[in-house]
Amino acid sequence: MSGRSFKPTEIDIYIGQVIFNWRHKFGMRQKDLAQKIGVTFQQLQKYETAGNRISVSRLFQIAQAMEVTVGELFGEAGKYKDVYDENMREVIRCLCQMNDADKKMILNIIRRLNVAK
Image (cartoon, rainbow, N blue to C red; front, side, top):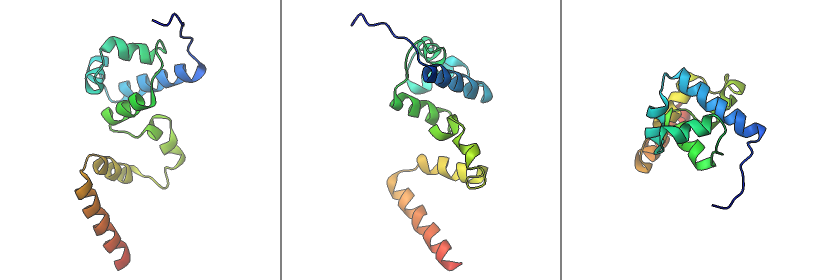
């Protein structure tokens, strides 16, 4: 132990609240989300209450586990809702789960469809 005490910042508190709100929106229990990201429910509870700071990589894991983007966690989707409708977000979610070869194949199809217009 380093002996340093952790004092949560305003952003630590905000991030914890955001995760809590999204988790409830999807009807997920702490135990379920914690299992998906490979931590204990106690650790997730510390993230949500700003007892521990969340790393960027862990935040990315949380977003993936809830099948949203990090931007969506923070309301960015609302800012671009005219550009990124629900269908576009679903396409992005699906692409994120594909292997590289399939992503390239889909990109080629999209390019062909776009040229055909």
